[in-house]
Length: 270
Length: 263
Ligand SMILES: Nc1ncnc2c1ncn2[C@@H]1O[C@H](COP(=O)(O)OP(=O)(O)OP(=O)(O)O)[C@@H](O)[C@H]1O
Ligand SMILES: [Mg+2]
Image 1 (cartoon, helix red, strand yellow):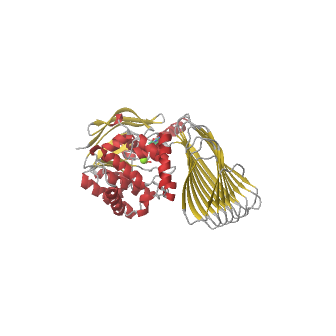
Image 2: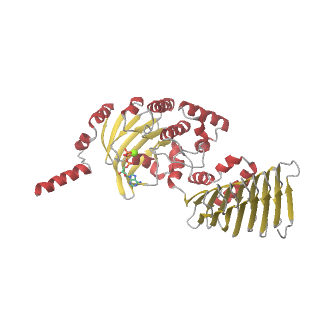
Image 3: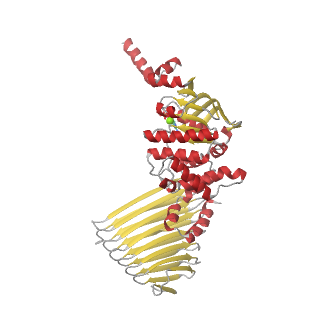
């Protein structure tokens, strides 16, 4: 069974430490909800798992299927069956979605030497596009170029459906999607999960997505560390109370509170 | 024109498409009026050469020019009234050369659509692409895509000139350059010379190294670094390949690309 194991992960960007000892496990077939305030390091964790060159692993390990990912290039990680739906997908002008996805799929299949025929590929792509209620033309448009916010997000899921990963990380897949699109995208994610027993790490700020994609566990990342884990009741708690009390409980004061405290002290000394 | 060794007159017969391999230094083409034609021209000359095209009134000409010879050359094209000219060109060289392409829009409603692809990985390529508007109501659109690798140097100007009395004319130029190695260079700039008040002109220029985020995105779907690099370089010619859907152009550009970025 595929399993992603992150142990004491420290990662920095531009010389600043962002992840400070993350421990997390995601198993095939389970849904882990990753929550946390803006800037807490959720996307950084997602990128670090997928080997983004801007993020440097300072310490710790990421293992997938027993392999040490930190020694592998991004494409190798992808071919092992990891997928990241990005918060802000990049645009690649002059490269059609169709060509890109076909090449990615060919790369994945070369191991067993059974390249998917162009005909079968096209059928599969068309079906996936239909499932996602996307515009047919998007297959032959350039990757994400001039796509609307929602179209970009659907395009991430289109790629996921085509590549059929073992574990997917979905970074704010719901942002930019209208209410119907959230439902459609969620159904597609759930279907693929059922079909392949895919594991998911779902990053979102909104309850609505988690109503469709039911988490088995909820973890809260604050200031680069996982400070709390729980079941879905933790989500309800955050929804009602925000992150403040969790921060306090974990002994984390954010900068503003600290500054306010300092200002208060200064005033008091006057 | 002096020293014209070869001359082709196109439009007298009903032949619609030509495939020519030019190996003499001077070649002239006369396209008669009211002619619609497509010409594939493979330039493989050893010495400096000059090509000359005269497109007479009311004709539609599509020229696909592939040059693989290792010598400098010059092309001059005159477009007369009500004629349209589509010019697709790809060049590949192993030695230092200068290439100049000049298009003169000489009559009312003359129009040009030009696409130029020049990669280099060892040689220095200089010269210019000139879009000369000489009459009112003329249109030109140019897409100039450059790729440098190894020690390649591309140093080109694209010059769009709107002479006096070119009212209501329109010119747009777009340059895109991808620099793949630290030792290669692309110096290209769009130049506008406007001598008439009532014209439209626009230009864009984007030259830079490969975007690491684009590479990362492609790799995150399982493409190797080399695949990703290749697919991004191919994006310089893909749109045109799609547009003209021409096997000859596809077959000719593939080895040019391979030579520049490696198989
Ligand atoms: N490439 C980078 N260079 C410098 N700083 C970075 C970089 N990437 C992220 N950061 C910083 O690291 C912190 C965490 O960013 P990250 O994008 O991981 O947050 P997030 O939890 O995903 O937030 P959000 O909910 O807003 O998406 C932020 O303070 C951010 O500014
Ligand atoms: Mg984020």
